[in-house]
Image (cartoon, rainbow, N blue to C red; front, side, top):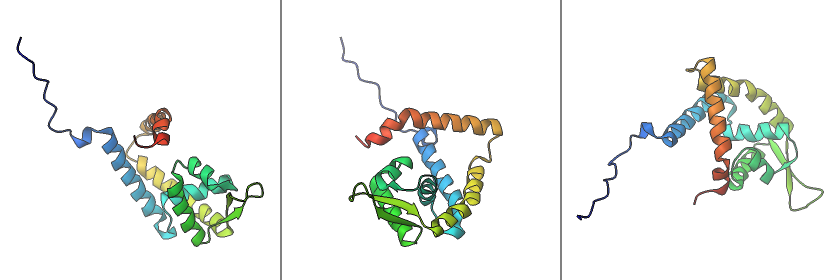
Length: 159
C-alpha cells in the first residue's frame, strides 16, 4: 500500500474570520471612543475602571482591586501610581496588616468619577450605536457568556 500524504495545511486564514482579531479590533474601537469622550478629563478606560471601583468599594487593597477590574497586579500598580501622583487616590496602611495598603479616593478623585459618568456612558452608547436594541442585548449577553465561560483562561495566564 502506498503511503498517504497528510492533507496540506491551509496557506492562510482570513483575519476578518478570526474571533480573536475581531475582538481585538473592537477593543481598539472601544478604547478610542472612550478616549474621545473623556479626553478633556485626561482619563483612560482602565483608570476609570479603577476610580469607579474604588468609589463603589472604598478601602480595597491593590490585589483585590486588580481582581475586581480584571487586570494583573503589576498593571494595576502602575495605574494606581499614576492616579496617586495626580492626587486622585491615597494609599494608607491597613490597621490589620501593615504590609497591605488600602486605597481610597480623594475628594478630587470622587469629583472626577462623577464627571466621568456622562462621558463613559456616551462612549458605551457609541460602541453599540450601529446595533438595534435587540442586537445590543444579544451582543452583551453573548459577550458576557464568553467571558464567564473562559474566565479560567484569563486567570491562568499564557501557557
